[in-house]
Length: 86
Image (tube, rainbow, N blue to C red; front, top):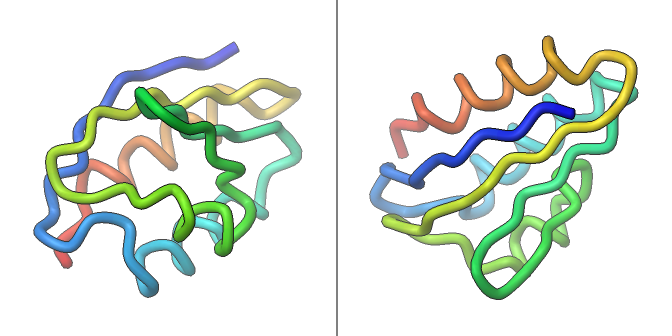
């Protein structure tokens, strides 16, 4: 299992465009990919789930990846989240 704690640093959080890009990236992997916050758990392969999570700037999240390609998926997704610009 791959786990990493991150903080959302872009000014708009996981709004429509980053949510779409994140879910598209996550669907490239077989592993189960979840984002956990203090109050919710988000299925990262679902745009609706990401948007309904209300993840905004400054939110501390835990990325949890479990499956056959968890290491590669975890590293790529973590990198994507840390480098969000908008």
